[in-house]
Length: 272
Image (cartoon, rainbow, N blue to C red; front, side):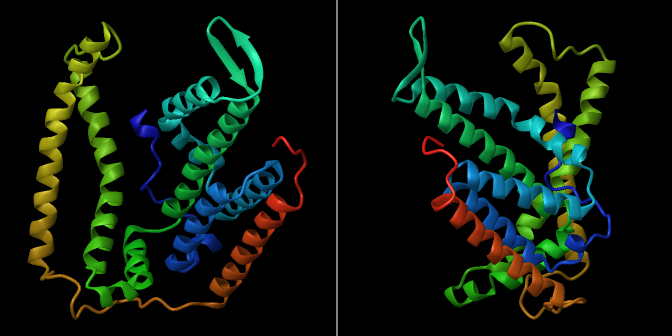
């Protein structure tokens, strides 16, 4: 399952989305996430679906590749559905034994599943189309106003970039360690629950050792190249908005307006 995590990976395809300013993609991702929780209703989610899959199509990233990232949240989705179905009070829909499924619980479960899936897909679009370096520059430039409040914007952006860069690296390292342990006779899918948990200790220990070693190597490499923070640093490729970025801002504004209208004026069904 770990190898199916796509968050933090970059998929080069040369699409228009790849060429957008990282600040546009960061703002677009933020607005998309806000729209999922701020607006509700089948009409609103139809608009969100059209927008999301149109963007995915433009990125030219295979849909199957993005869908792989959903395997990592299947357990979270199941837990969310179960809790909302059986613990939400309201008008009964189905009753068996001591459990009752209500209309309100079913509605909330459907909404939460859609939100979780679209949350992962929307975030994946940003990371798959933006290199860690561009993401760092976009965060630092976009949040530059926080420097007036003595917020270390550059350091925060650098930490986030390093964290995203290390996700696929650590996933590959975990896969290699797991295969090595299985070649030595380790079994991760057999036995009781506690036995399965204990069987992962031979993976976690060398993984932590490898992570600390990589972090130390990265720190030494940054010091050897004269890195001392963000003060006085210049950019090889300064961020400047292009015509396509302004078009993207207009499309984002149109999307938010469409979501507002769909949520408040185009309700297909009062229940949903």
